Length: 173
Image (cartoon, rainbow, N blue to C red):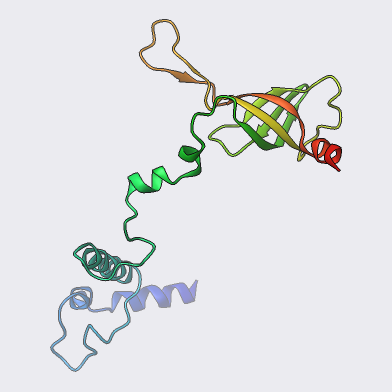
């Protein structure tokens, strides 16, 4: 308790204008603002200001990296694998079983949503982590319900399970 009293009493003796002097330019022999290391908000603000100036310089015709040249959103979208694939209907894809609930297999094939497929009758070997072949029907199951103005998604894709990928590889050998 005595140590706390000593700390509190030392704060009371601090000059009340000392906090104002922190933000004014020092005309005395103290360190100038540029030499003093900044921390906290001031350092973050300086960093963001410097990054913003660099971005404005590059947008104004400054140095642009070779990866960013000619890469606008439209060209990036055209080159994406999703657009390159074309329509999803009847495409054959390979996926991995990520979750099993009774007879439902949740298969991640790299789309926006997982596909939920029924486990076949002889599908005891289809466990979590198994790679399987799928025939896509729809990338996103959506429907407009009676009286609704917008579509509602089921957060899953429609696909038909064709079988495990390994079984097909063994047949070719």
